[in-house]
Every structure is written in C-alpha cells, then in structure tokens.
Length: 386
Ligand SMILES: Cc1ncc(COP(=O)(O)O)c(C=O)c1O
Image 1 (tube, helix red, strand yellow):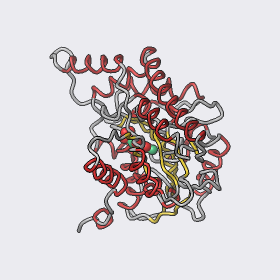
Image 2 (spheres, helix red, strand yellow):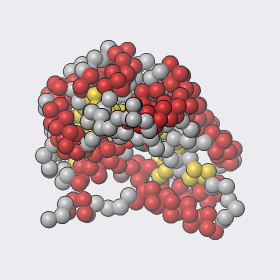
Image 3 (cartoon, rainbow, N blue to C red):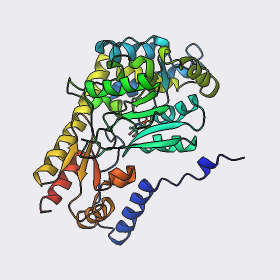
C-alpha cells in the first residue's frame, strides 16, 4: 500500500509557476535584465573564517593521524556547547547539552519531527505559511486547522478553536515578516500547556531580530520547555543554504527527547563533520563579526525595500527584525496579476503571496536576500509606478 496522502499531494505550484512565467517572458524578451527579488536563498558568499574551518576539516579527513569516521548522531559536543553558550545562555536559557541536536538544516527536522506523533491527529497552522508545515502534515494525514494571518489581526494568528496535537509557529515569519512580542509568545505557550499541545517553533530567522522586546527563542517564554521544540538553522544566519547545518532543541520536559534521540540514532547518522566545523567557526569572534556584517547588509536591503515601497505609496509590512517584506498589491490586482504586471512592465520578479496560503492573496513577498544592486535598480524602475 502506498502512502496515498503523499501520492496525492499536489506539486509545488508556487515556485514552478514563478520559473515558468519568468522563462516565458525572457523567451520573448531575451534582452531584458530581469531582477529576481522574491527568493529566500542567500546571496552573499560564506565568510572566509568559515570556509577556512571547513578546509581544515577536509584536511583532517585526508590524513591517517587526524582522520575520523562517524560522529555522534546528535552532533559534535563542541558545537552543541558553542550553540548553548552563544544562542541560549545570554538569554537566560540553559538547555542541557544533550537537548541540542545538530541537523543538516531546519527543513529536514521540520519534516521529520512529524514522526513523533501518530499518523492522523490534528495540527494548527498559521496561514500564509512556509509550505513545509502543510505538506508534512498532509503526508501524515493530519487534519489541519488554518489560523489566518491578515492585516486585520496584524498577521498574528488567533489561538486554535479546537485543541491540536501540534502547532507550527514561525517568527520572524516567512512570508509576512511578522514578529511576536514576549507576551504574545507567552499566550501560545500558556495555551499549549493548558491543552497539552506541542509547539514546533521555527526560529530560522531569529538572527534578524534587533529589537530587544522581541524574543529570539520560544524558551524565553515561561514553561516553554514543557511544550516546545525549537528548530534553528545556520542557513540564513551564516549563509549555509548549500553547506547544510542547523540545530533543534528537544527539552526532556516535553517527554519527547527519548523518542527523538531514538529516531535520530536509527535514521540519521549525524550532520557532516565538515559542515559542523564550519558551524563551529560561526561562534568564533571573527565568525561572529563576519556574520554580523552579512546580516547588516541584508537588514539594510530590507530597509531600502520597505522604505522605498512605502515612499511610493505601497502598504508594506515586515522587513523590520525580519528579512521579508510583505507588500499589499494595489486595488484591482491579485497576487498573480500583480506578479505579471511587475514582470511585464518592470522586469521584476516577486513572490505572489497566494502561493503561501489563502490569506496570502492580495500580497506579494520581496526578499532582503536579493542582491543590493537589484533592489536599488528595482526601486528606480518602480519610481514612476504612480
Ligand atoms: C521558515 C523557514 N524554515 C525553514 C527553512 C529551511 O531552512 P534550512 O535551509 O535550514 O533547511 C526555511 C528556508 O527558507 C524557511 O524559510
């Protein structure tokens, strides 16, 4: 018997359709300089301190005296300690070193964590959202309660109407760029504790938070260690989208640690040693300075987009403490018709909000990971949009 839930999952229409429409346009206008401004992948190269560390790791593997084979399934202890020391202790959070699991990126764990729960069951997912939560839940045959995020609720989802087994939350949010305050986050943790739900908290973009009132980690909320698993990534924080490394915190108090450890030991033989040495370099003083500079660059691109679009009269959300700019399309357009308009009139490619869920209709997403010169060029082209 096949997994019919997986078999019947529709294709990822959003990104294929963006590529198809862009290619159709460039086929007719080969001279056009198309500006790709919607993509969530990073564009700055890795800092040298990180590539040097990975080169050294490769050299170690090349010599008998320093060669090593399998590492611990849950990751190298030196990396887990560095993560705790830099990402948690300064925020008053003290996970045990064994509660941190090194992954090959947030994407894998966001999918795999679903295995902790019986097939079926109920899940609450804010929408619009990053597609992985929806697809993983569908693959497991779960019933989804959608939590619409609209401008009326400030893109902050309301609590579920029916008790879910799992709640997915992502802040700073992809695609809306929304962030939660401490008290808003606390409400979710309180809800999960009262209802015995588990929150899978996607903190892939926490590195974009500058405002001290905004929590970086769900464990800044009281009692979160009882109900929350936090999924983090070096992808956006340090440019690791190709390198692949992330980490997930599964506290003992959730009652899920043993199961997750067992699952990882069976199905995951650990992240690449080379990637983990690269990630370790992120936490050296030079690494910290280098990634801070790259993040400053992206944050400045976010500011340019946000202010540039606002000056033109667009209704714009996000882009502060977040890399995504969520832009309302003008009256009379849908997400896709505005996408076509920007492509045909200005040779600008954005991401239509409707592709992230029903409440994304009426919006497009711009990304601070876009090349700076493309962002500036786009704002110049759009100046006369009127
Ligand atoms: C919200 C969110 N979570 C997770 C990921 C995946 O991150 P990784 O590269 O670590 O798999 C992305 C990638 O864009 C993302 O936007």
